Length: 163
Image (tube, rainbow, N blue to C red):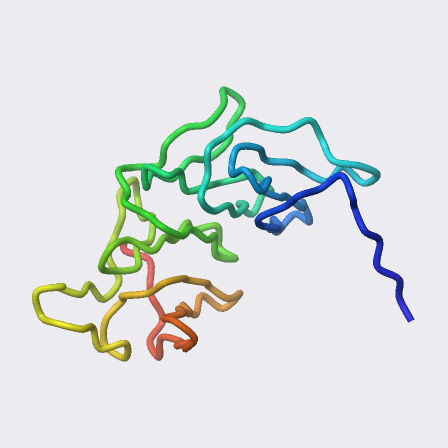
């Protein structure tokens, strides 16, 4: 039977991993990001995030409280397009996805592409036909998943890259 080790020095709000095996945690004050370095956590990286994820290469990516999505590069944090995001994830193919106000979006060729948009003037969204979501995930086959409240849906049709 395995043994769990408590990391008392960590007060984490979120814990995420990159496809490269990197482990990241967002501090409970939403202002610091830490990466596991094999025997301890690195020096904190300053940010102000509501949610984190990581790219295929392990670079951290986050949604700021302003709804913008940022990725950490050599020159610091840089914004990815104009977004009004609440959640972000990265698919196995490296594509960045986010949940906006009325749809799920995919980063395609330098801009955000809506997946099954919903018009709020039409009343409550039909979860089986629109991209409205509280959270999004994409599996290794490119299948898009979403959560609305306690319910989970998968899209019966793959989202294909635009040519």
